Image (tube, rainbow, N blue to C red; front, side):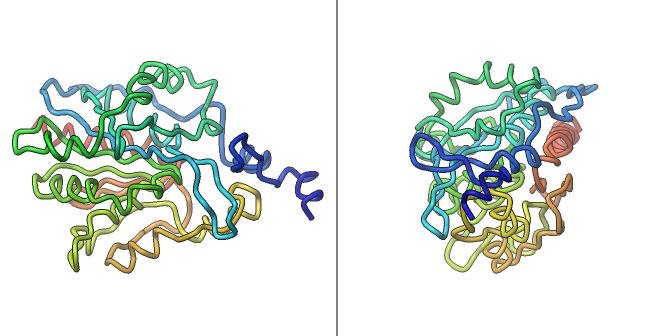
Length: 286
């Protein structure tokens, strides 16, 4: 069977650290060397001091249900296109990980022929290598006069590692909610919203979002995108807490529910970025 999978291109690709990245077939079906970034032009960019705090994963490998490890991180398109839109709209972006360790990126999904994305990653290379510490931010910078307009959580399966159970992220999300700031999350990024649960209270109870469907995650091992079935499904856990995921496919769906902006998949990255940037501008430029 493993020989046949290799022959068909559906066998996950081993990585030097003993994990697996997606198969050749999965990469062909799910990634592209370019994106649909629309250029990010905005008539009235923001000129104030409020910024975006982007919370990224610092963990690389996800242990699947069968014990095999998936080489993951933040998805470069789901991170890059929203960043390009937010920057074009006039917002500076601060980057943090839970402890300040380097940002992990799914480099196998990098659109290498997309000049806007590759230039962005070059420009932010220093911030990705030496991000701020979320722990330090919560201790010293999470104040009433902190100059932030919103929190952005990129996608990639890595968003399920070290974020959904992070107490500092929970404090940040509840602070942003209390301060009426925007929270933005795409694809698997909404998994990190689970950190906002405190006791029996969950600030997103009753919200509707767009996110990567559990049903699709259950199918992807078949083409070798994942080396095994997921260890857990974030959609199930969010649903148990009163969140409704409105999309059934990994499509370009985006949704704004109060101050929560969400997107379904890499296909939504451009639209999600534009919706996020335009929504913030309409509020701050009003």
